[in-house]
Image (cartoon, one colour):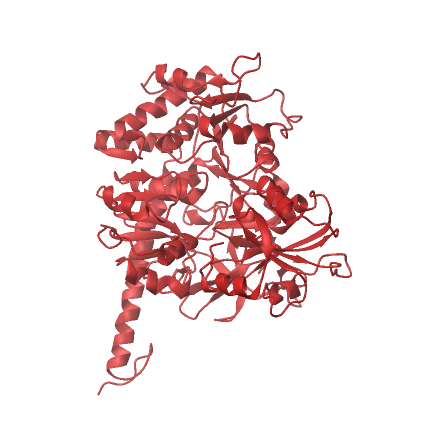
Length: 626
């Protein structure tokens, strides 16, 4: 007699559900065990930093390829030599432990060598976002007060636009500017001219930095500043210490079960942790290699992957959608990919993406540079960003709590404590902050600004004095422990893989002549991940769409540029003088529902054009690329 299986149904269907669940539990258990084992040395060996790990890797894999691109290649030994040269250069500049060096450089093998060498010498590298224009780039520099700034020659013009906004009143001296490569935009003949970096590096010693020249350091010391967008409107510099660098590298190598046979294809920005630490470190720590593309291109993606024998690639959801919407490529199924790893792959394209490109395994995960909440979807459950089974909750402590949209904070009950959501109920994800060697993923290192760090901490959530990290993300968790992403909280929306702060965009828009008010928000677009930027404007009668286009393209990065405009006579506000957004978000950008004048961005004409019903249909059908 077959009986009833508690996981689903009677008879054969019940057994199938049982074995499916058994495979899922095994996938999670084996992945979690691998991760904890690889993190154990990071926890126990506090004086062993990433440069020390690299030295060990050179002993094993010296002449094997480590970092490759279309223009540069490093074996493990060559990579180590370049790291040593940067360390010697840093010491020659009298770099002290904790001193900051800004780095503005596109994706390339050199990028990783820069901050590894500076870290060896005791310095901290601020990984500057190459997509940010003028004032925003200057803000990122100002908040970390670097003593030196390294700028790739290809980005010299961009840096010059930011230089006028630098405010070094909190720094004792002006930062020294170093140019990597030749740049005609910068005059090197003046008294305060920038210095040329590459000749000094090429002449530097390739031997390891002597022990007596290395400062005493451990994994609690800071290694990087990686910038992240938050609800405050401007990027924040997340503290990334040497522990977190290795925890990310070794943790994701375990999650992806990387080996020396793997080659990662990385076209994600290396100034972010996903492209700079996850994609690179997950294979380098196992003796594998990384092929680095300067940027993502749907037309060359499969050529790069196939021609360079890549076995893995890193993604964000928008990348997957671009590939899926692209014409068939002759090499899209002739690859050697065994796994792709990333976040943001939405349920509506998941199976089609995996099927079309014949991808054996997708490892979706949820994490953030500064967050202590990390989830892995080890068994490939479609749509889930990760899972924590009930039996693992004591090891990985995260909850989904009820959220109050009016107060923009987790709800408190009569006793003053938070309430855990029921299965399937949407709430904010929070993760307990602990500095416990047995729970290494639960640490929270904060930002360069302590006030910004405190804003992310939820205190006395379930008992007096406990501390939890607020993710700022709304999710639901089902009865089996799978997490499903719903949306970002507050005035921040996500577009093209980046968080866009509405206050930051509004401030840039109101600088355009004739704009009296700007209310920025994000709207859903059929078939697109995240939300596209839209702004309700109160403008003078002679509003110039072409001039406004030129203004926003100059002041804002591409991902933050408003896609849609809505002209209004006035902006609705709340009783506390906050702009109302909820109804605008619901109304969207459909000209059939709205009477206000609507415009859509048009990069071909370099202007905003009237949003007609025909253009609306083109956008919704995916024929018009945004």
